[in-house]
Length: 163
Image 1 (cartoon, rainbow, N blue to C red):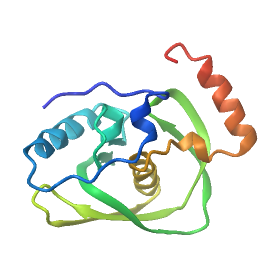
Image 2 (image 1 turned 180 degrees about the vertical axis):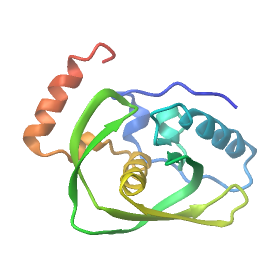
Image 3 (image 1 turned 90 degrees about the vertical axis):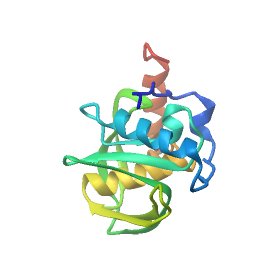
Image 4 (image 1 turned 120 degrees about the vertical axis):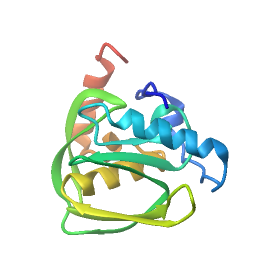
């Protein structure tokens, strides 16, 4: 198990949809171990595989002390009127922007044994489920910002020391 380096905005791996994981692939277990260890650093709520440079469909989460993962997740349900929420991203460090998210979300996928997994929740869990599945689809949260907010966000990101 290894804490992996986070890929930052501008890295092409963050802009491509991730490939499904083939259950039984020995590399999948190592990826999940790395995702779990990497998400346990304080302040991290979720981590998609492409954020550590692996273009495969899996993410880990660390919400309210519950740490886990899901393989090949699909966002199957969102409900409630989208609300503006303060949101950050490990791949856009140091910034938080108001982002529209549904107050409830549900994803389905599998675990390393191929057994069904369903994750759902409200609040931070709903936000994380939407955020991480967006990552796996090759989308960063700043893409969904209101036009004026997006311009301001891009201006600030371009001036960041890590950019």
